[in-house]
Length: 203
Image (cartoon, rainbow, N blue to C red; front, side, top):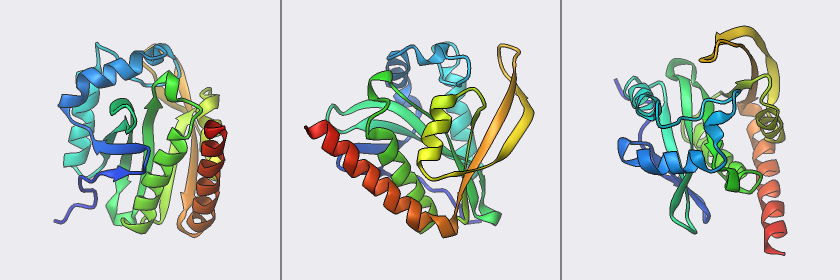
C-alpha cells in the first residue's frame, strides 16, 4: 500500500526541515540544552537519558505511516535548533497532528515557529490534502497554547486526565485544529505575521 507520509525536505530562506535520523542525536541534545528545555515539567523535550528512545519512536511512527519527524535547521548558522513532526496521522481520514515541537531558547519568540508552521501546514493541506490538522498541548503550557492560537487554530476541547506523565502528575490535554476550509485565511495571516516579524528584526 502506498504511504501517505514520505520523507521530504521543506524550507524557506531562513529555516530547513529535514527528516530526523540517529545522526542528529548530538546536535539535538545541544539544542535542548539551550535553555535547559528538558527541565520544563509540562513539555517532553528529550535529554541525554531518553534521546535514543525519543528518536526510535519517531522512526517507528514513520515506518507505520503514523508520523514524520523533522529536525529544524537555522540556515544562517547551519545548526539544528529544534524539532517538530507530523504525528497521529490517519491517512484513511486525511487527518494528522503537528506536535513534539520545541526550539532552542535563543530561537523562541522569533520568526522560526511561524515559518515552520507555514511549511508544515502548507504541505499538509496543499500536498497531502488533509481535511484537518490538529495541535495538542499540556493545559499548563501557556506559551504553546498562545502560539497555537496565534496560528488561527480553534480550540476543540480539553481531554481531562488524559495522560500520566513521567513525574506522576496528571496531564489535561488541550486540543486545537485548523480545518481545510480555514486554511486560506490562516495562510494569509501567517504570511503577514512572518513579514511583520522580519521587519522588526531588520530595524
